[in-house]
Image (cartoon, rainbow, N blue to C red; front, side, top):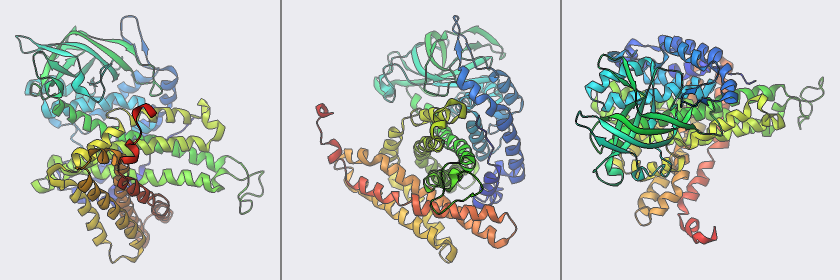
Length: 597
């Protein structure tokens, strides 16, 4: 059975020494929650994840969720009590507004907890994770009355939430949806239709489930311009906040899935259900994107989280499992064979994973800080820049971290050989669970199209040039530091390749939009490599400073520098191939007639 150990030393190093959390005390959230408090909360979160959630991960996979004849659903053994403990500990309310019972903690802390929860039990983590997305959408777009009714219970976790977009005949193309909303004289709407793939759609963890549902108001515009967003509670809520009658929404079935069996992924039937408009009529996508962007960051973390836990177990196995001899001579001559860790190809897989995990964690924490700046920075220009970074990099986080997370889970399974294919070891569950993250909340190909089709040109390219500015500022800071020369050179080379790709798109995309689409995934991956190279440069600078100061763990800092060196020598060269593929355009890709496939 696999084990999980929360990477608390990594969090501490990144927050204090790499990202400079103590310097952000001018922001309200950080003034009340300094580094010491954040680290204490992380330590308590680690206990919950390691001791309560991780042991339930295999239970959830084996048992799954059960739908009963009346449409009710029960979660796997232990989930209900674990959720009760999670709520009683105040974990759902960490990053929520104190006006509605939240703790007002920084986004960076909430996302770090999210990573640990997803590593320990991804299926469980989806219940509170989706709830927070509903909270964010209502907090930003809901009326005062909707906020009063729903936000306190969503904040506490007493009620959970879902996001309802997909229908049997339409996924990404939401303009095709058929779910209808009929206006009523009291201002409510009657919702009718069917939604599929609804994570946490029905369960026994909470007394009420608040569904956010996309639907078209009868008589409204066709296509995506006619889509509105509605709150549809499982149980109607009385004016005093108590629960009333059961609403007209029911679970028709539970999807039979490849992974995340512990989460109830439902077909939901809306039969004259009562709903309430969120935001303006026919403007539902704008409000839903608040939740989707929140969810996309969370899904990106799922990719990293499963890469982390699968790495921990694969590394432990490679150190212990005896197989063959080192090519340079026996490493353990007193034993019958050497451990797997001596073999270069095993090292290749582990180092790829380690180098990704450490820089991807720094990347999302840096983005979380941008979210905190956006929420509360008094300087409008700083807030605008943070908003630009969030919009630009959300698809990069979602797609790249889940693409790599799945690939690394597969490689971690490979390290086990045949044992990795056996359920007892747990590695095949990580592979199965990780696969969905590349698909839901917007398939990764769609994320790449969003990046090149919408984000690059937004505001005249202001965000992407600000990103280049971040890299250039870091290179200038390190220019006179000889120890940083290899990292700066590699970062500069990757940055220049990304700029070349960006300019190629600007010059050729208008001539043939297929050029943009054909190179979009390579471009997103190239963008991610530039971002991780920036993170590794910061990590290396902090590690080198720590070694020079002589006050920290020298072995920890040396390992950071060695892993960073591996990244720049063995991973970053992929950026050259990505640029070459982007510049090849779409002609070869589109040359075959459809009938030839």
